[in-house]
Amino acid sequence: MSGLAERLGVARAGAPAEAEAPLRPREPRPVPLLPAPADAVPGEEPAEVDAAPEIDALLRVKERAAATLFTRIGTRLNDPTLSEDQLHALVRDELNGVVEEEQAPLTVEERQRLINEVRDDVLGLGPLQRLIDDTTVTEIMVNGPDMVYIEQNGKLSRAGVRFTSEDQLRRVIERIVSRIGRRIDESSPMVDARLEDGSRVNAIIPPLAFSGSTLTIRKFAKDPFKVPDLIRFGTLTPQMAHLLQACVEAKMNIIVSGGTGTGKTTLLNVLSSFIPPRERIITIEDAVELQLQQEHLVRLESRPPNVEGKGEITIRDLVKNSLRMRPDRIVVGEVRGGETLDMLQAMNTGHDGSLSTVHANTPRDAIARLETLVLMAGMDLPLRAIREQIASAVDLIVQLTRLRDGTRRITAVTEVQGMEGQTVTMQDVFLFDYAAGVDAAGKFVGVPIATGVRPKFTERFDDLGIEVPAGTFDPPVRP
Image (cartoon, rainbow, N blue to C red; front, side, top):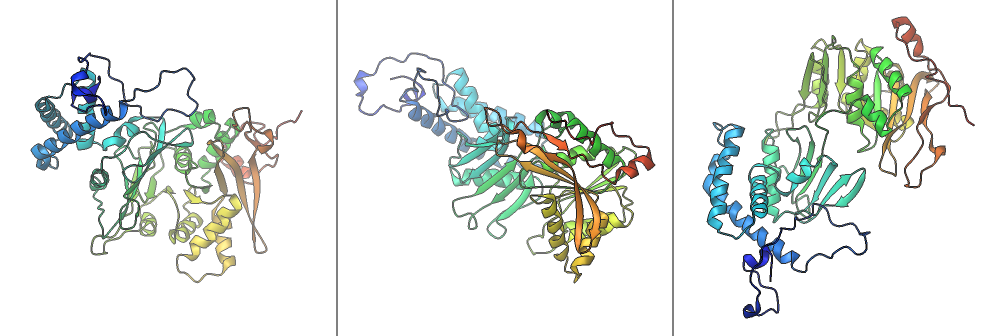
């Protein structure tokens, strides 16, 4: 008998105690973050049969240590007089004493892992902390305490971590939402929040979540992506980047359209980086996510109603208020309701250069979606008047799509030209080249290519002295 399980008194089934071999030290085997792939290389040494008891034994030690630590310093975790560094030092000192009292025969590596995991439970996000720290993980989805999934490289897989109980998961959720002054309980079982690094969080708990508390975390890069990054990823091309920069500098109104998880917020960040630093920017969001680098920036965030159902501040309220704040640019994180009408009116009344995103699958669908959202404002407007507002306000629609290979690409850059009868007329400037096919790994090899049409808004470039490289609108020469 060997391993941590034996050192902590977990006997192997069917093995008499008097037959146990003397303990021999061995190197600890780390618990894998992700399960082993199905296509493991043949001939690899199989996992030891006592892996599960060993992990369970360490888990029991961790639970006892965490419970003892909470008993000792539970009331001081929310002490406003303690700084973050002081709180971490307090937990570290107390935790070392708790582990010593356990008197468990742990190796140095096992002891350090135990301390790290208990510290994550007390100060961090418990078993999710390792996933948060992993830069390759872009999204974390918790479907109850035993089911944790992650997104890596655009693909979903199940993570090799879990919560010990529903109570532990609820503690993590409450720790996240309490840091930004939000609350979650049976009377208010849904919440949108964010982490300190700006990552977006959504949580929903029973009775609405039947299978257990559900938590979704969409991570954002600590260093915002820039144009060279998106070109390297294949999201856009250098020619398209030059065109989009010229459009932002020319104060054109741009809508970024796409489905969930297509990278709309990332692209909106990149477009916002083209705004000259001398201009006053006001961003309006449900939960602050944009990472603009300009100095003259005002960031506004909506507020949900309080426990009495009062005090709500909507995106629409903030859009109306922003018009009185002398903005040069208004950036709305996403339009999803009646604020669309106010945003379009702002675009049509001297606030050129506004940026926003909308959920839609094609540029034509984006126009239809804007029509629907305007109707949600409660104004009894004729459809033609709404379409005229859209055609007059919006200059460009940038369509993002998440392809089946997991990559996020700009699949269309479309100019909104005006009205023809009852129809909003549009012209594609760039389209993704699906005809290029996929490579042996199943990845699309195509890129967005120019359609050969020179958009009408280039006349504005000429008036403002903005130049775009020669050949930007030339279609590729086919062999």
